[in-house]
Amino acid sequence: MRRRHPIARSVRKMAAAAGLHDAGHCHPTREPAMNASLHDIPLNSLDGRALTLGEFKGQVLLIVNVASKCGLTPQYAGLESLFKQYRGRGLQVLGFPCNDFAAQEPGSADEIQNFCTTNYGVEFPMFEKLNINSEPRHPLYARLIGALPEAVFPAGSDFREKLAGYGCSPKQTGDVLWNFEKFLVGRDGRVVQRFSPDMTPDDPTLVAAIEAALG
Image 1 (cartoon, rainbow, N blue to C red):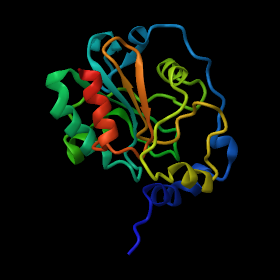
Image 2: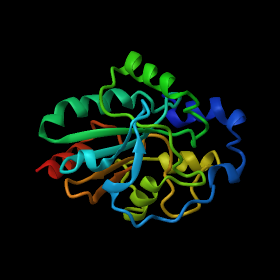
Image 3: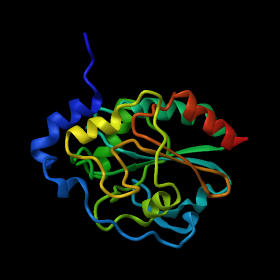
């Protein structure tokens, strides 16, 4: 029996409520890229603590926009496995909830934390919900996208075509495609690579890039 694509499952469920038929919903305007260092951009942890990525300076970062009601949500398990496997060598997986994609992260900070802990045992750092494609785009994502406008896809991926079929193909260069897109940042704070949402955490391409960045 043919498995339904995770985007098909999630978008069919959410399309009516989220307005995916409306091109304006899928392709909002964006904030210009910021000139600040990636490590200096102000952030808040999921429990409301103010911080910057400077706390992780000298480590390799895998920055992922996450959601609780997406067909790709099970990637939380793989991300936690990566974190546990490589944190001793200096990897930090950082989760950034976002409600931009079919409104699939509607929860409060407490709800998100409870969901992640209860269902996936997430221990990697989680941050407050932010805007990625919606206006105003958070400076962190303006910086990440400005550094690498295009993502790497797994071999044979039809993810972009699936999104196009639902009217959500990004019109602007650099737009994040969907939940669970991944940016790999090196120890020096430079963006090393960008991976599509359907690049699973255990994909050899992603794992090899992490190991190379860790050195």
